[in-house]
Image 1 (cartoon, helix red, strand yellow):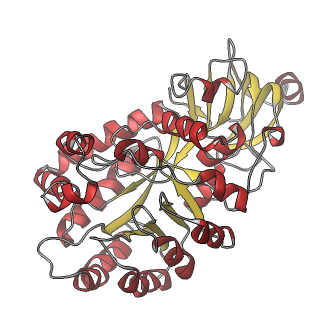
Image 2 (image 1 turned 90 degrees about the horizontal axis):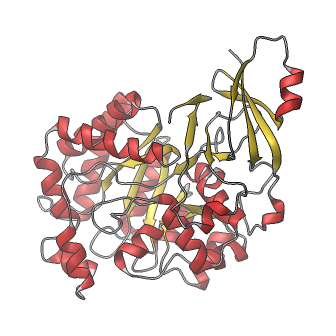
Length: 410
């Protein structure tokens, strides 16, 4: 059944805006007293609510009237998360604040391998419930599409268990869950070296992922203490030849990951906190989507992704939460994006684009992220009279309503 929802005080469809380059707020189309006409989870039209109501009169359209002020924008897309994990790393956080580095903590037995032990020890039911709880929180925060990585199992059986939990939980959840295999997170303690583990992933994990359709994407952490560009390159090329989407954790502590992403034709490269002029210009000259992860900068107390420089150079920019137990435990995407915007001097248009259609591009998705005809009817509202209030409140103003596939879910 066709449904007309509105009137919205302001509707920002985020259409006809480029995926790459800097944006000014004057590029935002703003429709006052707006409505959205949907059918079977897709958008049929946007425009003046009264006009749409008159045009569809007598056609059996169900009217969902909005009472009070409401700013409507596309649902957020969190294109980089590690939502499936067990336990806490509060001890690591305290140690970092006391002056120890991320690498020092990892070498002493903390870090990713600490979470690995806790995740391996958790039951499948416990993992599924914690993932559901985090997805629920994200959905209430206006995030209608969520990428979720494996990466804390770090053995063949445990990585496959994680991916199966992501698939089963995601299939049952209201939000769309995009699964990514991050078996190449760090080198497992039981494995001799990075080459051996990468060969094992290709031999023992990838065929099962294909057979059970557990993920369409693979990720790798290219960094000292994890994986080198030298051995990551053939691994990623093999995965891409098998039809998988590629993304890379790159340029977080040392450079090299962003150039590798360009070389292998990755969809995105995420982090980029240490990217310099050379890396920025190379990314601007490529099709790779840079993804800023301000939660990691806040959690680690390090520099932000050079978002302003990337956009000014002509690159794209998506913004994601990186929600994980170690470097980005906050998980609040809107708050992080607002803080990034303040420190990097991003326009409201650039931040909203980074949370919606540019984040969709980082996932290789073209059917969401804007309120255009034919797009998924995923949209959210804020109780406000002006769209600029959303970032002005720096995360304190949360969505008061969320629609998924045209249906209200909160």
